[in-house]
Length: 140
Image (tube, rainbow, N blue to C red; front, side, top):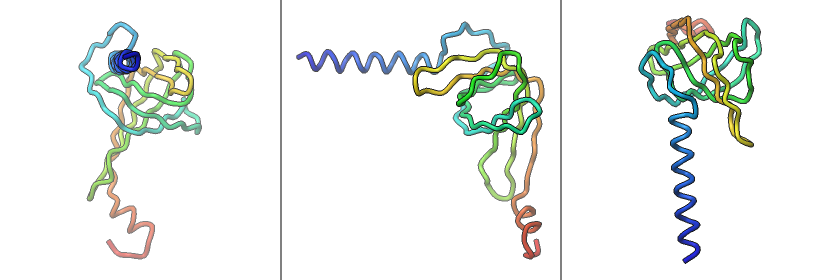
């Protein structure tokens, strides 16, 4: 009997955590529709060469929210680089640049949430066949 109560409590806690992850604890201040995405990404700080890995939670036309292993300063500039799958004949990288507007501290062992107001997008279409030909003696 006591076991059933504990199991029900664990299910309720998991549901609350899922809701907090997807909804967030901040009031919704978005001006654009957001899309829930799960994608690995690279994060560059300012103009430097320091890179971190991240996981995108959602994005919109003017913002992106990622989880990562570092806590940038609010107001700092970041570049978040998303790369589509390497489908033939082309794949696309999208660089989102903007200002950090919110940093959500992590629970112990969890990732840090970073909200970025995006003011610049850059799309780069790459042709893997050309890259392969440039790197080898195989004619394209």
